[in-house]
Length: 427
Image 1 (cartoon, rainbow, N blue to C red):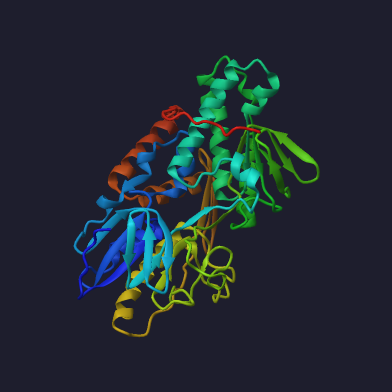
Image 2: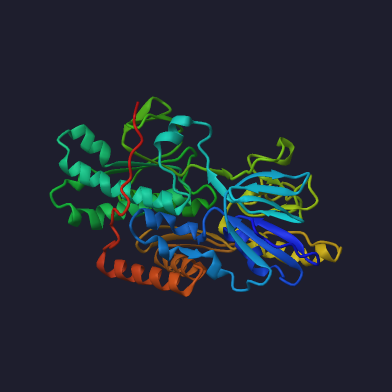
């Protein structure tokens, strides 16, 4: 991998440049460690706004930023674009698509991937939204479907193309359903005046008795009410059994004919080969209160991939959210100094600063420790928090400009099929 060895510095290898990995890479002291950051992409993605890329609200360059320009202090820092295939924990080596590398300390921050719960048909035919390429695929698919519906002479096929089923009623599913509903109300009738947009159906399916399981009952009810007013058909207490590319089958003998199933029903840790079953819990690496893996003295895990079960408030691990990843990345970068000095390490304590979700224009819900917000004020707070959380000034400026234009003109101006998406063949 063409990385020099410095005998006076311990080498820290970080796998993943998400919220957690990026925090560590930026803050570890260059005079004490040689830092190697490895990722399959050369950019950091602000995942909370992926749904806006998918629904033509933002271009991808407003939520992505080059890793090499984010890391300012390049002394003793190296970035390599690669896929990590295997970790040899005994020899302390990682094997990648561009070669292997020895490490003194390893930090795994690979994040999460879509969880299909073992259903191969759903994995094959449905559409995930965990990365920029996937969001762009979904944007192309949505626009292509309306172009196809416009020329289709088969009423059943036309309805299938204009029916969108979102599986999963968490923040991602709620936000995506709201964005699609607003496209139906404000945008698509102008783009397709010769198409009966009222035939467009948006379904939101949730396995539990309510939306937004991780938020308060008040926020869940408000989100439900807002989505219903926007015309979204919400089915609660329903479990998706299968999908064949044309029909999604639900328990209690229900089914929906659709060409578009968007899977937002769960995630799991993005594991790398080399670990044993005893090292994991639910596809996440078990860590102690110092974020060190339980069975390896020099391997740490942070972010979605990490599962700390000894915290009584979070017996199944901390929530797989951006704020968790950022806090763990900051904590570990500070703790590494104590590790090098053989001092007692601090324990990680998660601080819940709140959870929020937007339902649409002037509509959002926010849960904070001591109070709850809904409506316009919650929407302003949601926009502000997401705007300041974007990496660079350019990202912030582009996103803000797009939001301002869309607010006053009711127009999503990036409805472009740049890269046509090809559907998978139905056997």
